[in-house]
Length: 175
Image 1 (cartoon, rainbow, N blue to C red):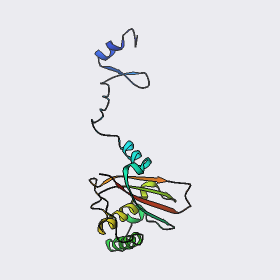
Image 2: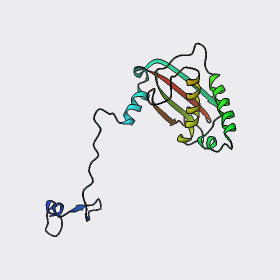
Image 3: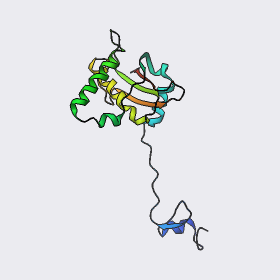
């Protein structure tokens, strides 16, 4: 018996639904969201890329490691004028370009991971990824940074790294 001599089926029939706290209220039970067929959960895709790099990559990686220098999303948006943002963009493009050697590799599809140890929140580090992607597109390493070419981005704080250091890796994914 669920309540006052009624069965669970009786309560459902008259429109009462049991709440998580055990009480009953009028309404319909919330439907269980259905999983879309053929789609892997995002977390599973990113773990596959991150944990099994050799299987998912053509063995090619571009690694950018540096320390004591960053630009956060907050800094980027607080720039006073678009000309200041352009100067900042040019600075970071040149900075990341200094890591590359000719001939530049070509990545058709790629994944990105950023490991870092600094005061920044994970979401505030996205600006460095975006500026590096834009430079790689400008130099012809990647075709575009949209979802057709970029399979995913992982941002992971790593307390074991030296303080104020960053390691940005682009993985050439097999097609």
